Image 1 (cartoon, rainbow, N blue to C red):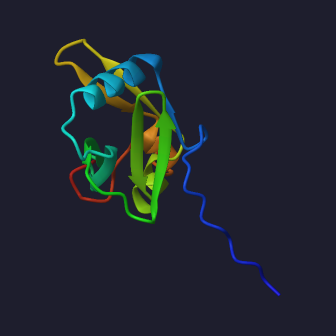
Image 2: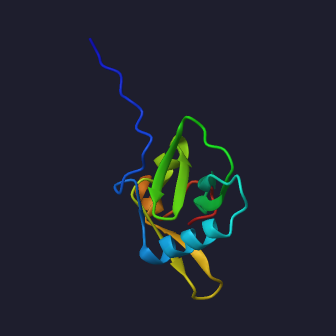
Length: 123
């Protein structure tokens, strides 16, 4: 008889790593957030030759299928599908150029090679 896998609601460090610099910025964002904000949602959109697009927004509501990484002063929320594209990534924060969060190692985590040859533009 097969056994069903249990849903683990916590994000672990094998799924996502957050640098100290990024954690500090996430804490500051949550300190300035309006009431009713549960955390910071990481999302994944797009695809194609440029790869996926990774971003963040406020999480006003948590879905039962969301996975959560709770740290001191902030909570990161990711739905299970987005997490499959983020698995193994490192989130950092840079002030070089326009200050922003940087998602490192995401393309490798979904088996990408960094080369594109399927759209006809390559070659």
